Image (cartoon, rainbow, N blue to C red; front, side, top):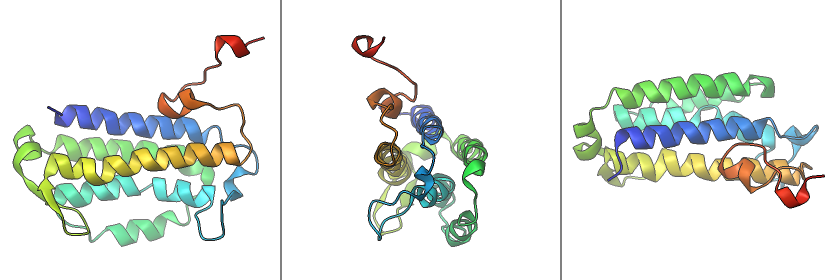
Length: 169
């Protein structure tokens, strides 16, 4: 059974990996945009700087009223402010999840924005956790597509730099 502490640790680890990947965006990579209708790397970082905390807050507090305001505020975040924004978000998410009892995590009902209702623990898996994993992968792919051919699967899944033995000099 997944515990609240397990989910908290997994969410915070995803954030750590995202900050690691941020450090691997190549020069000029902030402007990378796969197609005109998709976010640029900078816009993805801005989104990542608030979405997790705003989504967890919406689920835990049962109120999504602040989401549009934090989304708008993030549009002015400079790329160099991203690690600090992620650190702040991690602290807030941990505090939010710490405020929930294990009993509430397992039994309290929560609603995702599109109307589905689940127990809070599952709702946190269905939206904030799944989103942070997906957007971590997107950031990895953006860094690769923008020109960083040195990062690999280990950067993406573990958040460390690693070179396979057969590729070392």
